[in-house]
Length: 64
Image 1: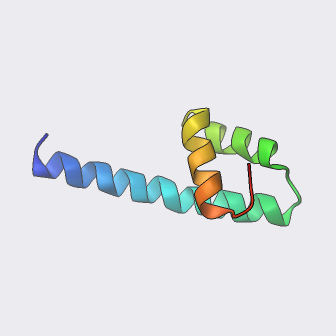
Image 2: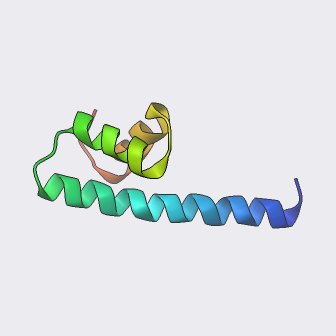
C-alpha cells in the first residue's frame, strides 16, 4: 500500500467517524435505542454491524 493510499484511507475513516458522531448524537437526542442507532449507522454509512458497534461504543459511553 502506498503512502497516498494510506492517507486516502485515513481521510475516508475520519470522514465516516465524523458522520457517525453526528448520527449518534442526533439519534440519542431523539431518544433512539442503541439497537436503532446501530441500524441507522449501518444504513447511512454502509458499514457492518461490528463497525457500527465500534463507533457506538467509542462515541457513546455506557452503551452495549
